[in-house]
Length: 120
Image (cartoon, rainbow, N blue to C red; front, side, top):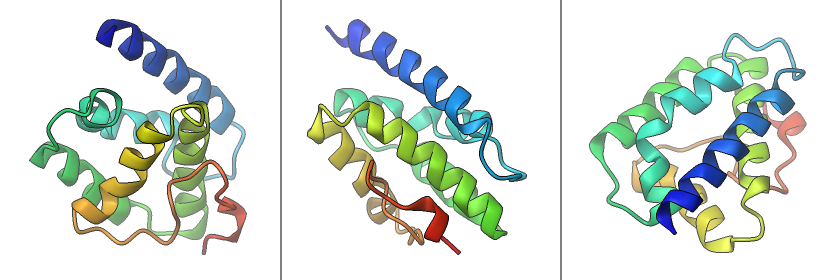
């Protein structure tokens, strides 16, 4: 069952990468976002342990998103990925709670309904 979830997550991430490829001209691509957040996958998908590597990835990604297009691009990538989990509110809730658990304040909520165009 866990391997099926992992496969589903990988497929969703690939879909999110293709969807985000057409977003604003951000210096941070969706591929980079997904790659950076790899240490968080087990926490979100399998309710695994929240690791220091995951929190470091979130901090680093937040620090790297210095411009409005960067923040909007990261937001869109996370939104698209979260929307793929919309049928499983537990996974969306775990993903949405990650920044707070890692002490990071994002200028948007990780949620399928987030309006990333309004992120400054």
